[in-house]
Amino acid sequence: MTATNQQQINDWNGPVGARWLTYNDWLDERTAAYGQAAFAAAAPQAGEAVLDIGCGAGATSFELARAVGSGGRVVGVDVSEPLVGRARERAQALSLPVEFRLADASRPLFAPHSFDLLYSRFGVMFFDDPVAAFAELRRALKPGGRLAFACWKAPAENDWYVLPLNAIRGIVEQDAVDTDAPGPFAFSDPQRVVRVLGEAGFEGVELQPFEAPFYYGRGDSREAMTEDALSQVFRVGPIARLLAAQTDEVRDKATVAIREALSGIATGQGIAVSGATWVVTARAP
Ligand SMILES: C[S@@+](CC[C@H](N)C(=O)[O-])C[C@H]1O[C@@H](n2cnc3c(N)ncnc32)[C@H](O)[C@@H]1O
Image (cartoon, rainbow, N blue to C red; front, side, top):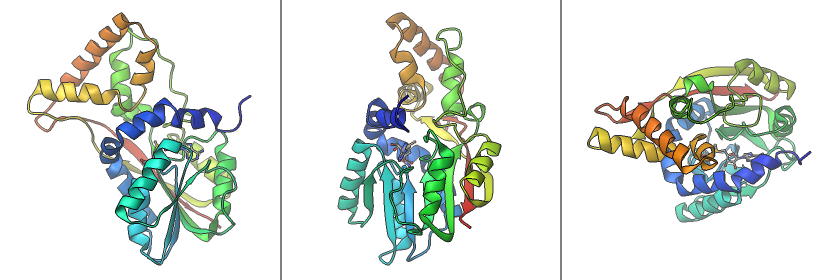
């Protein structure tokens, strides 16, 4: 048995974290709309204390810092050393007083009642024991304090994830996505979200759907868009990991199949696929 969250801590300090670091600007651009939907629901106010959970390289922490102003406080917490390192560099470059903590957000890190708001863009789906993690996070909220985060809806509604997988069915063996396990889809089932947050002591749990196109490929021609999209498919989602373990022959076949699938949906605006999320809100009693 491994220590709590150890697999995710290894991943985010290993190949997954390295990919997020390399493509950080690209990922910030692709996920901005979803994060903004959660930001609007969070409604951070001047002077508030906010915790950004699983803050990665800090893009949303900086937006929060601008909203709470000099009288407020923003703390970003993340387990990934490379991403927290990048966040600290960016904070310095932007002269924004965000405090970044390299730590597991499910641990007792903060004094009770430290924050007015807990916020996250896709950073809360990776806990081995989500009830215990959210109970700990809730203790850090002031009475009546708010929780607002963005998480992905079911894989079938997210073509950024399943379109390349569907394209290589019959070429590469795939396990079904386990939506109860830590990972991007751990909060895709609304009943699970309501149960987890309820058992963790939150009240007034609500889920609002939010969808926005996820741009995979841009370019002046169908060929250029397709090649752009193909390289991007290897930056997020399961494809890089899945194909890394295959022979060159299988990888080549899979690449041809994904290229065909992407080319088939290119339009004048580029190659856009579906991205569907929940904006989840709740409050501490
Ligand atoms: C999908 S990324 C999102 C990063 C960032 N919120 C963004 O939108 O750019 C998920 C983040 O959660 C972090 N994470 C995973 N498990 C965590 C934990 N137990 N405590 C704190 N951060 C965690 C990862 O290191 C990663 O940076």
